[in-house]
Length: 90
Image (cartoon, rainbow, N blue to C red):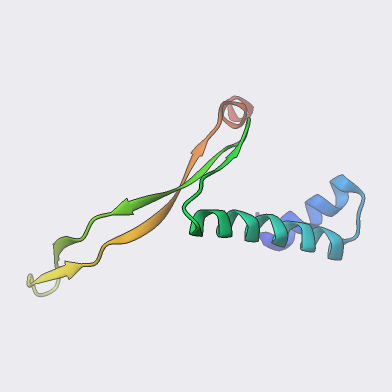
């Protein structure tokens, strides 16, 4: 499912226009993104938890040449599925 299909599904299930559903989906995604940027985690009980993990800088190798390269430290988004979501899939 892509974003357009999600917007259509939200519009059908909530009985609203696709424009309103697109605004709602965008608002949810923007809210999650801004919370993660500020270092918070987003817990949606029964669905899952969005959080940020920090990766330390490390040393890697270029697979073509074998030379060492430095990999910069970064922050990665993480998602852990909640019990309700896991139960719905099994």
